[in-house]
Amino acid sequence: MNDLAARLARVLELVDREARHLAEVTQRFFGDAEVIDREWLAKQLATPEGIDRLESFGAKFSRLQDTLSDKLLPLFLRVAGELPGTAVENLHRAERLGIIPDAQEWLGSRGLRNRLVHEYIDDLDALAASLNVARRFTTILIEAAHAFRNYAEQRLAMFSRQSP
Amino acid sequence: MHISRGASPLYVDKRGLRRSGHESMRLTDDQICIIKTRAAECFGPNAKVWLFGSRVDDDARGGDIDLYVELSEPLADAAWRALRFNGALQQAFGAQHIDVITRGPSEPLKPIHETAKRSGVAL
Image 1 (cartoon, rainbow over the protein chains, first blue to last red):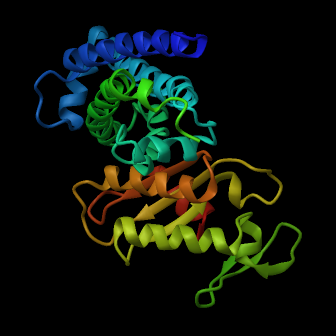
Image 2: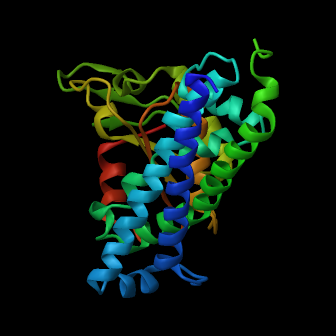
């Protein structure tokens, strides 16, 4: 295994951990709640544990998104023999490879983190709306984490050195 | 002060010069056109969009693109559509910091909405 592939293996390990932590905190925070609205949210924020879980969810959501977009994706493309481009270009390549479902949604989701923090807490409707979107996007992040690993394990060795 | 005249509002800037509102937004006509087209795709043809924040301040430089969107019909997944709208604009403009606030027709006008409309420019 060359240096680049070894680095990829390490980042994939990190992504596995971050994805697991995000899945755990998502379950702790949202549980099986079907409707996330201001009433549900007010109840969560009435306890210090609820506030901690919200903060932890926001932090872990952002961390996995950053690791996937900024660390893993450019490295993954290099191992695949491609030159990483801009963030927008890289996400489109990941979409073409079938690793992420929609580059446009991924780009749009990057602004979500700022809406999951304290400054928006005074507007519970807005925070609840952002949490609904973030919860839905969490599934996309975690599935992308698995898709990166599957692709790397099953196809990258075969494709490396062949891509332009 | 804004003097509306059809699709091209006139704008009196801080130095008292009357000029096209679009010049004072620090967005190009192409960018405005893209914002309006994408907004129509994501929220329907009757959604109204305002630009507010530092991009309507002639003395500021760069800065986030803050957009306020008023929906003409209630949309259950407005927040998800806002995410897609945001992503479409980042795709068009390069990855920039864009913030989108939406308000459905039955939602109350909150202070942030009021500020966006009062201080912003309708596109």
